[in-house]
Amino acid sequence: MEVPDKRPDRCPVCACPYESVSQHESGVMVNLLDNARYQRVCFDPIAEETGAKLRFFHHSHEQLGTEPGSERPACLELRR
Ligand SMILES: [Zn+2]
Image (cartoon, rainbow, N blue to C red; front, side):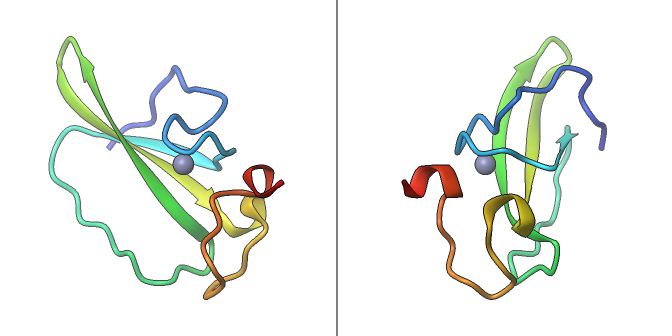
């Protein structure tokens, strides 16, 4: 796992703010159960000179105005 140097301002999948991004070049396991810190993670596949990578964009509950176990709106800005 690596943290990419060049990061977009917004998540390329859902266009919402994100807390952190990680980049993976091999298989990963994802736990989709309720998480106390993160509301969701978006996955964005990219192609680089060294091969295919998968970026994980981590969205916190605080950023999206949700609480653990709450409904899953896209993000506050998209609700308007
Ligand atoms: Zn996203």
